[in-house]
Image (cartoon, rainbow, N blue to C red; front, side, top):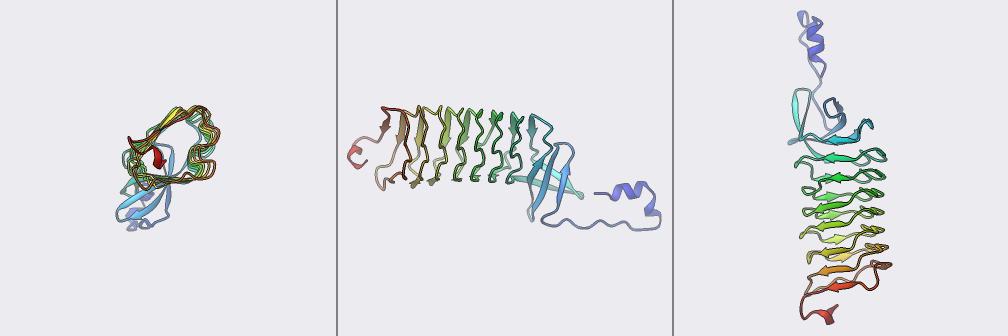
Length: 239
């Protein structure tokens, strides 16, 4: 990205100025957003966020960024990109971002707002310890990693995707303000401690009529008492 600087300095009077071609793994900072990116693909041209400046309470991730005169689509927020960003309050994601890596927002204690409605993959511990996060829409998420929302004590609303196949171990462990959840019929397994210590979880709605999964060990330990499982008519004996 320095060709213009050398042209301005007059080097092109004697030389044809060439820059190296971009390669997968190249990293660069986008000044406008304050974010650092890494190229993940050249065809199609795609990048992921790998770090932030730790200087703002709010970040807006751009849909595209430029590097060496090429335009790249932002498709992923990489692992640990916002880890322990203690003063982060909100993040705006473009529709192009579909992947959140492992520990990406872990321990962002003040994070209150992020739209995940277009995200399909959420890595393990991605939002662990985000105690001020109140609502999440996972309506397109087909994969949610272990401990993804562990200790999100402020969560009161969770929307799960109709294509989600597995709720991993401790995915929503210690979501202590969650009062109700609807688990879609697409879910084939519920891991250990998945909803453990969700102290006020009093209503779980499910819709399986066959192939009903057996929850993992302590999946619903320490929830509200009494708690009601809402099942389809005529299926109570199956459960």
